[in-house]
Image (cartoon, rainbow, N blue to C red; front, side, top):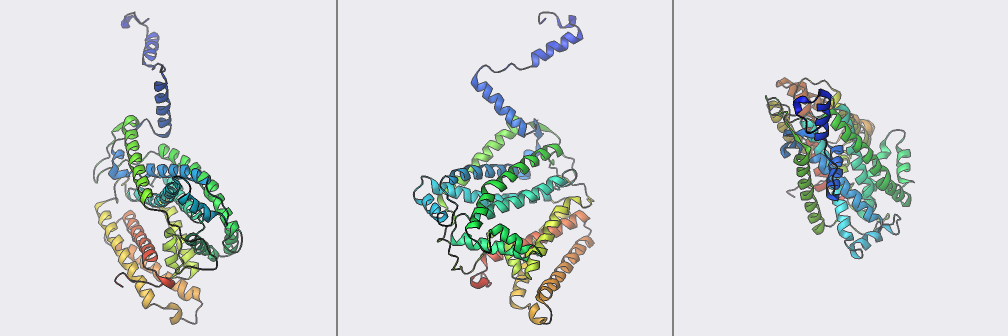
Length: 457
């Protein structure tokens, strides 16, 4: 058939000849078979072609891929740590000492696990912010945004449950402070706390519960949600970056080798940085846990310090429950609010949005720090209103004033000609700056007795 002139072939036979010619032959050697398997695996995780502009590091920063890399590092190092760890109060701390002194490369593995977990929290937050500030949460990606928020909570939960496992003073009292926040949940607070702790206080049952959550329940849940999250990203299509007042560049390139080569180099660079950092900076480990001796100050894990700082200024019902719950509800509802701008893929939506976001961040930092100083040295709602219960004098009243300030700021931004999307972005940035400032104050500016220590002192 191949020897016949092309013009003499009937149409059906010609189509058959072309299909035979174009079908690649199966590889004859092991190297070719391996390449075929790897290509098939890559194309199961990625589309065959990707947007050329989306490969720019200045748009994606590789945050999604970095999260997957960190998760794989955590799983692999976690499996190795299982061989040297015993989840009991009598042996957990000794396991940490043995890792540092007796197990070959044990300290390096623990350091890698610890710092990868902390970095994963930071990268997850940055990934969420990247999606928000490029409008990547709008139709049809609303549910994927909700899953992203859920994954962020799971990442924090994984770090929180792993925090206790060394069973040193830092871990024991950080978990004691962190779990005490649950007690302020109305009606079910005590029940939730006892379920998590396995009793009235942090003890052997708590370690067992946290160990099960940390090595099985949370990682399996993250794996399932990440798989669904990636599938939804492929289904809903990734956002294509574009410049202001310009249509998006719709050109595409093949995943192999363009995207794969970038991912490989990016992963290798981060692995080198992680191993280098973990080789010289040890994960913290204090003396063995002592329930009878509380450190001063007793602080929560660093990613909960913003919430602990809120408790310094609000009644616990508001600082630990109402304000965080409203913040989480606001995050989940963002993609379902009306969108009056078509700015998907544009950083900060517009030129006005950019300078409004920058101004809001600076204002949020200054206003929050000024409020912390005022509340520390001047404001005294319970003293001024001694006839009211504390949940009113130090709860509803300052909370209502805070809401009035936020509503006034939103209206001020709108009065400057901003759209609803730009105004919501400015308010979000203001609240983000406030939370980061509270976290900074809680970590670095709180000393003995949680007293405020100013930098110039």
